[in-house]
Length: 101
Image (tube, rainbow, N blue to C red; front, side):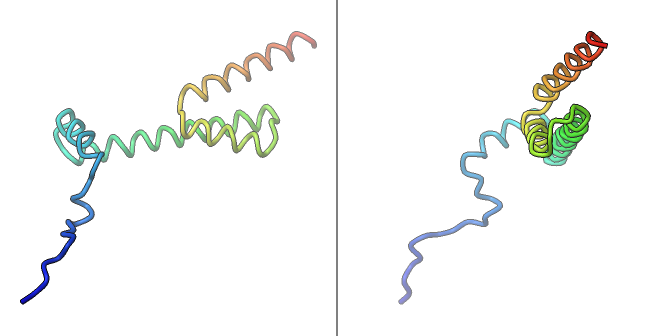
């Protein structure tokens, strides 16, 4: 009478694929979806703040517009290690400037 569908498709939100074990681990640790969302938004906000600080520090070092944006992107993606490297460059630059005054 009717042709059965060849591909039965689930709702896109329920099909997590590879991410399902990661979601299961996150729920096992944090016990709720809300806690996972709060963690995600907090991590995103921290990386954005670090990226803004890196942009300002790179501008203070007069690195150039493209380099400033590169430091912003690197700090946003990598977070603290990139910002720590930039702070080390800033302190070395400040020490060098004081040395030759």
